[in-house]
Picture 1 (tube, rainbow, N blue to C red):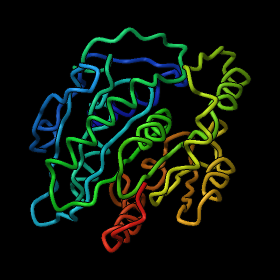
Picture 2: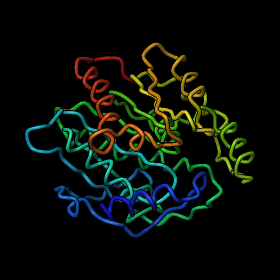
Picture 3: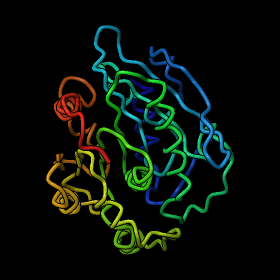
Picture 4: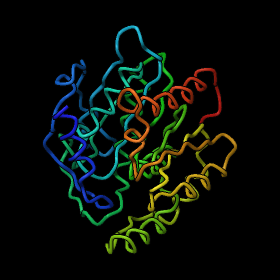
Length: 277
């Protein structure tokens, strides 16, 4: 219990809405009883991306792979309790660190950048490896906050079966304006940010958009707008703040109500052969 509280303290005590990579891992999957494979995936521009592949609990395999694409701070070890909850319930999880995060290759980062286009290159590489090496599963992205931007850009080049995004960024310029208003922070947008909205509309795979009632940055209204762009997009709301879905949708075990909704959504994808990007 002390360990999980420590991880949550670290994860949610970050002053978010600025890129803050952490190199050291707070723990590893085996410390939570999960067996895992660690590998390094090369990107098309020569970076090495540290990756963990965590298989589901024996006898519970849903044949669904989630590529975890996290927010703008910490590293993938900060999400291990989310990963454990998912694998305990039958999901395969592929977690990775962006360049400059965790044990991935060095990359110079300005913390005031909203995101880097290069992070999408990292995700493209991980998705390519995942689809090639984990056979027989439906493959989707589970993205949080900044990770939803990364996923939107990556899915212009790589196909998946579905996309789940919590704290989904609707429009980078508007998001940066909210950060300025609420945090008094001047955010830097990378090249091509003005084309983000058009790319978001182009995503054809089924989407589940998760939003918190108390989230002032990526609001429920934003998720509804994204969902209305195509008829294969759905929304899920929770009572918490930005990316607090697992915490607020907990009844008997961490994130159990959240995972029930993910299960309903992803099981529908197993019967779908088309409808991809």
